[in-house]
Length: 131
Image (tube, rainbow, N blue to C red; front, side, top):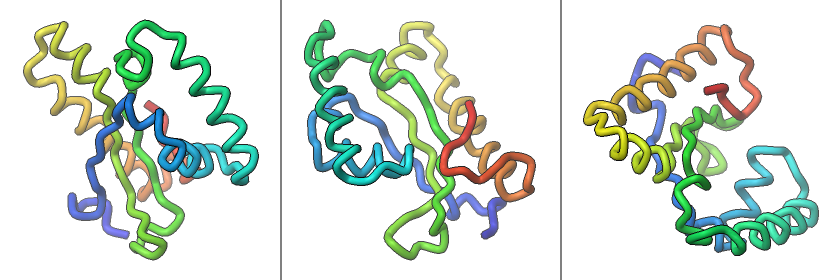
């Protein structure tokens, strides 16, 4: 695992509308929290019920106002999993509101730094980075 190589980490987006699709939400909950499928499905139902009551429902930027550095347990590419940085649309909306043109670069760099910490053993490889 060569963290110094940017090809080791994929950059992905987080979109509020993805939360409306159980086919995306359930595996995400399983990956992030180590849940079995029935437990993740029950939690997904509860999450969707709450989201649908929010102003803007699935398009509310608060839902995706986060960025994560995820270290895959199979970062060699097996199981179609890769180390990743996930940045939400809500982060970009907030940075735009603040008029921080270089903000996305800072967020990306910060999250990439977590991957360096993982590989150097500074931060625990538990599937979720601290931001």
